[in-house]
Image (tube, rainbow, N blue to C red; front, side):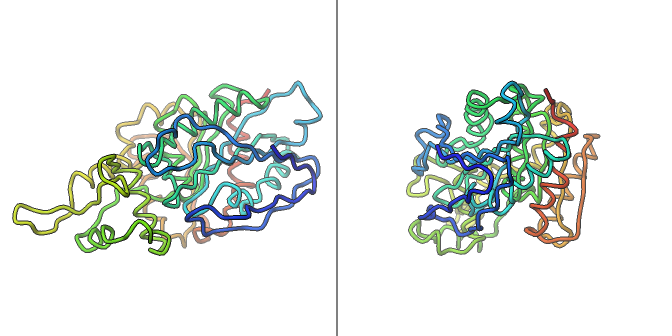
Amino acid sequence: MRVLIASALLALIAAPAVAQNITAPPPPIPEGITVEEIKVPGPSLEGNLEGNDTDRDVMVVLPPSYRTNPDKRYPVVYYLHGFAIDGENFYNYMRVPEAVAHNAAAGREFIVVVPSTLTKMGGSMYSSSPTTGDFRAFIAKDLVAYIDSHYRTIATRGGRGLAGHSMGGYGTWVIGMDYPEVFDSIWAQSACCVSPRTETVQSATAMSAVDIAGVDQAGFGMRAGLASMTAWSPNPQNPPFYADFPLGKDADGNPVVDPLVIAKWANNSPLAMVASNLAALRSFDAIGSDVGTRDGLIRDDTLIHEELERFGIEHVWQTYEGTHTDKIGQRFDEVVLPFFGEHLDKQ
């Protein structure tokens, strides 16, 4: 374990992992803030067919009083990164130490945990798949148990919040609905993949033509589609992707979109999950989500807001002037962490 305190710099990964294509410089570490880089074992990921690492890198940011007040326990915010970036670079881009310091100065102290879920396809999609590994269980079970056993946390549901951006916003919705007993409150920033994913015969044909050795060169959208496929329609009997493509044939041998694969994908859509997870959603102390007005995901994120309203699920919904990636670190600091400060338990 490396411990970095005060103004020490956080070194970037020397050799980026497969499919990683987004990097950010390390942020300054304010005085009193402690950052630890740790490895967390993931039993839930063992045996995954892609060969993704089961021991995951995790950034842990500790508030100023953690070292000076050894009897105090703290609420924890778990913060999930997006596609094609690892946890460390997401932590860098979001300037998490500064956000923790700013909120501590306002009387809101948290431990913030940023796990890396980068996979060989570019992202876990925070899904439960024998191909990628069960990343939902890794976050809700393995990671939470490790943090509670190694740090002075408020180790109850009331002491835990879950947030994420883009693919991490998607993860916030689906992990929250699958494991509502673990987290008190959730906030999804610019969540991707909210509506059920569909394909045309043309797009499904293009997807099935990608060689596994050429995934990194296939373009962002195609890589995201292939990552979704391995997460949502896994098939241990169909190497080398160990997943079912959305392309089938009709009775005459003509190419068609496979309806069963599309149904499996829809089963992983947060929008489709709302109606069957009402009890879970109503059990949260608070739910929040936001999206930029110039973000291409605004339609999807508006749809899940409207679906929550349709079923009377109380939640905070905000839009702001911005794209998919600007202002998100600022909003984590000024909106998301204060939201958790209002709702999570304190010692």
